[in-house]
Image 1 (cartoon, rainbow, N blue to C red):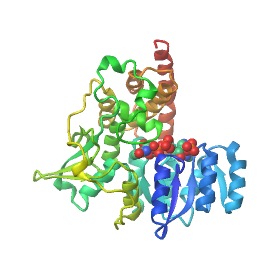
Image 2: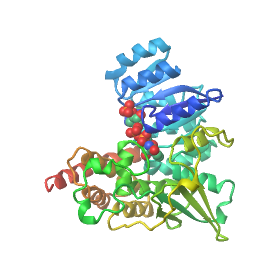
Image 3: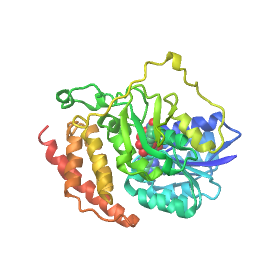
Image 4: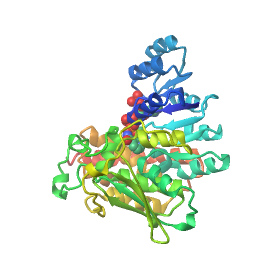
Length: 388
Ligand SMILES: NC(=O)c1ccc[n+]([C@@H]2O[C@H](COP(=O)([O-])OP(=O)(O)OC[C@H]3O[C@@H](n4cnc5c(N)ncnc54)[C@H](OP(=O)(O)O)[C@@H]3O)[C@@H](O)[C@H]2O)c1
């Protein structure tokens, strides 16, 4: 039996993870759950899974949660300390980081220090503090198992191969809802248009990131930290069918790919079962019924966010913090209807241009850069907003 803590249990990944628990009740048990603001959803999960510990972001929602918790005999906590308490509970074996944004950075570092295996769906934490997180995991001998489908695919393709055999990592991207939209039409793209993802059902923030291709940019940075491969050897290919989840090119010219249905329960289960494999709880891939597989290079003029992410990785240091923070601010403003779609990349570009890069040697330096970038991006977003 493996004991889980799920950070972000009420979200898209969190709910898929609980579906994996439902499919393997003799192998997985839930010890900790943490969510942001959906107190009612978390309360229902507490009653059903009876974790030992549960946390919410805000104290305001704790009374409602406590009522549900008392029935299920759980402890409830709130805020950043709550996330840490859930992630480091002594009975937890695996921490699934599936909260959105960067709130879980300290909790992930605390879980690593406590020797927990990390299943990482969240990409913002690695983009923001990849050096700190990977260094801590290496020092403590803690595995970081990627849940993001592309990195999960690469983890499967690399399986045991020495780094000197690998020439390229090839991340596939669906291309998002605007893959075929001309630049002029993108000027008028609405949040509703951007939230209509062609192949994946995901949370709102990552869906907008998929529409700008920033999601793929964040994944390039994530791949760099997870697999220790430089930017020049990480390539992105648009693959609208989302069947090939990613590929690894080896030095003898062979390319290894991982294929599967577009269902996050697959990579989540892999991260929970690794190095074992458990039977599938979802329908498997039927290639005779799939469309023809297509691949193309991304258009960096229509989707400049991907170029900005490569640029941030090449510059290094806190430039990746600035990229990520400015993106979160710009996506929020776009979702709130305050910023036009093309202005998302302008806010990020402007924030990066003004950023004074530092060595992200401590969490404090990382958080300070994040704070600065958010404030700068808010100012830029305010200026661009007037031009809508
Ligand atoms: N969805 C996917 O298919 C997918 C694939 C690959 C990677 N990812 C990555 O996985 C992460 C989650 O994505 P998602 O699509 O599942 O997002 P989502 O549906 O928006 O869910 C986000 C979860 O995080 C929780 N949360 C937000 N702020 C929090 C905080 N300060 N403390 C604790 N919990 C907090 C939310 O709680 P409330 O809802 O209660 O507020 C919710 O449970 C993202 O980093 C995303 O990039 C997602």
